[in-house]
Length: 449
Image (cartoon, rainbow, N blue to C red):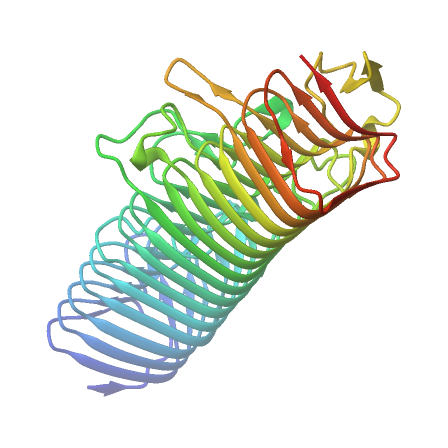
């Protein structure tokens, strides 16, 4: 069936029906979608406009095994599209304004968008919300989204593939949960990325006062893992964490830059940090974490789990460049510099140990790298830190502060222009290679029992 329609009400396509539309305009009301596809229906749209009242129905609604493809589709609607069961929605060179959501997916639905411009209402999710069931697939490329709180949202076993995006405004670019997987490539956003295998809580919450960005209220009955692959990603805004990798995340990061976040990357285990399903594992290459000296707390915060870091520049954070709390960290080709500027007037020496009067003895903020033992009622895990080919310089307190027992090995590096070079406490014995150069520090090595 071919049709050219002017202003019309709902068009419902029943099983097996075909519809091709050019140059039409539809209006949705409170009780119906502008265009609804039923089982096995097919629709092709070109240069079509949708308008909607304040109702909750979507401009496009695809059900069953229906297929809709649209080019030059534009909407002024609260919801742009819904896809459920095994429906497929594909939009190209399209746009929408006034959104609460651009897409709501469930079942084995597939939603694909290319070259879209989406403008959300304040406090809303402009693209992909609550992909709730198994094997839901979201693909988006060359999308400009504005005004989100969560731009992309994937839950349970969703698969999300995002590329060539610009997303401005809001608290997060992407939230993935359950056992979902996400691939993020060539993305520029002002909000961060949340990865959380467990439900409950509000991720990426405020970090003020040391609050955990992964505020999980409870565990799921089964251990889960989410997978995040990020390549050529720039987060350039003021989220509490550029990436919040919550317990059980497996992340592979490459060419990721975070600017202006309170924490560049936050990765943690929870409870028993030696339980396989709760270990957060991060493999990272070519990271750049740039902090604001007044508001940027930590470049990379790793609590429990494992970090393999190859090639990173961390600079301009107020408290720590790299924080290791009971983690296993191996870093190569690492530069950490200009840490702790805001503490300059507060730093004191306690028996020559550099500390900060506001935070108590031995905390040692303003350190390029800080390590300490993880102690809780579930576990006691000593940190391990291995550095190779590194440069740590211009930290207001210390290049390296080892808070408690643990292991530290370093070779092929330079520690220069710091108030302290290496501070360490208790019986931890650092292994420092002869090819590690100490230069122009107020004090190169200091130990306190």
